[in-house]
Image 1 (cartoon, rainbow, N blue to C red):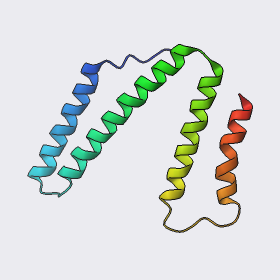
Image 2: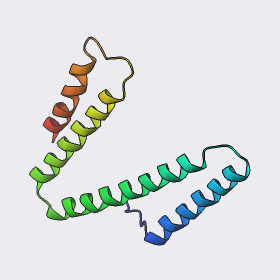
Image 3: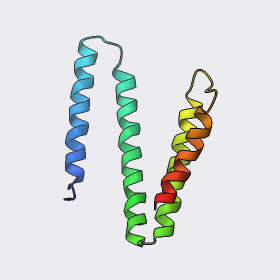
Length: 108
């Protein structure tokens, strides 16, 4: 598996395309320009930060740190799924969401 080189200029080119898209939505009066720009900015910041965290994490080459980070990421993702539900999950749903990260870490 080859590593994909994602240089900062490629990120800037993608940002330029988003700005161009937002100009078109502004001209077309679609009403989504502000939310598009905010979502794009948040996505870029989040991806850059998680990239830095993962780069530092994998450079440490400690399996216990990688497993701990995987557990934290899975728990945060599970919490986000539960928080965004409009209807509360009943039955085995919450139990499955809680046990899947534990099972995945057991495989490591």
